[in-house]
Amino acid sequence: MKKLLVLIPLIIILLTSCGIVERISEEFQNSRTKLLDSITISDSKVFREMIEAVFAAFDNHDVNGLKSLFAVNALKENPDIESQIEAFFNVYAGPMEIEKISYSTSGTEYIDFGKQRNILHNSYDIIISADGVRYYINLTMYSPDDFERDNEGIHTLNVATEDALNSKYFVYYNSEIEGGGDKPGFYYQDSTEKRDDIMWIQGSFWRYMHYDRSLTADDIRAVVEKNNDFKNLVAVIGEPNCSWTVYKFYYYELDNGLFAVCQLDNTTWERVRRDIKNPDAIVAVYIADETENIETVWISEDYVKLGSAYRHYTPVDRELSEDFFRSFAMRSTSLSELIDEIGPPSVDQTWYAYFQLSDNNRFAGCHYSGDEIEEIFIFDSEGSRHTIWEKSTDVDAD
Image (cartoon, rainbow, N blue to C red):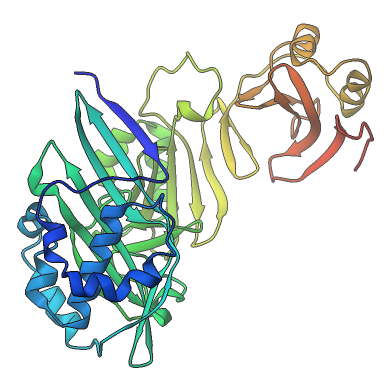
């Protein structure tokens, strides 16, 4: 059965089920009308009404009222939602003042032969204050869901204090977290400490699973040098602590607090790749901390490191220099003419073609659009980059 997935930044939907509209008292709606009229008409009416209902429950410390806004399936998946709400109301000193409702409703729409499922969430801040404490609200809901009516309603409601939100390691609870999402639920955060189930690696956060084992970079390298199939690594070492499956990165925690990152062959990074023999092949292993790639400890012979990325590499027997690319740019800006003259690039990536220079440690990179070269630059394995020609200025620069 063919399905259509449409990403939509702004959604206007009328709620036809679940009784969500009926839960919102007319008196409460009128009390907020003036402020909420400032929200643009293109924002979701359903989402706005749900926020109204949440505000009403907050003002009245209404545990059952707030619980009733959650989807039936959310309550089944997380039986602790009621206790999560009660824990919040034990510290929340409402009623509230609305400081800011400046958001656009975004989400995902699934359409299949007349049926649809809309997953909505607020893209920007919803800020309230109570008793001198500022709270930020993030909400994810389904409406409508013609495929499963019990999905309609709130799935995840996040409330965070300003101190928590501004802390270094803050992460909302989210069922979409890569590596295994959180359960639906009501999540209140006021701590500035890092969550135990989240790890920061190279500036991004990942769902973290602790394993009782001792690992060094040498342990990982020894396995990969003999057999670089990722399934073999899992069989010998075990499952990774974190993963980014979309781009095939897998993270193993080391004894020194750093992570060994195993990158698999990822065709989405390459413009033309038809020679992949093993999609589970590890192409590089490097060591990373919270912010950056520190050191490469192993790399496949058909890959090369360009800056912070590892790219599929094809050796071509030829002699090339910076001066050649400078002179070529004076007579042509056609990528196809360049390839006809000197052969294919050593590294072929969308919008970028890299040609290895004769000193082997550097590449001439051509940034192109269509067949038109826009820029030529020199790039080395450590990420040093300088432009030698630009189409816009036609002036050499170091």
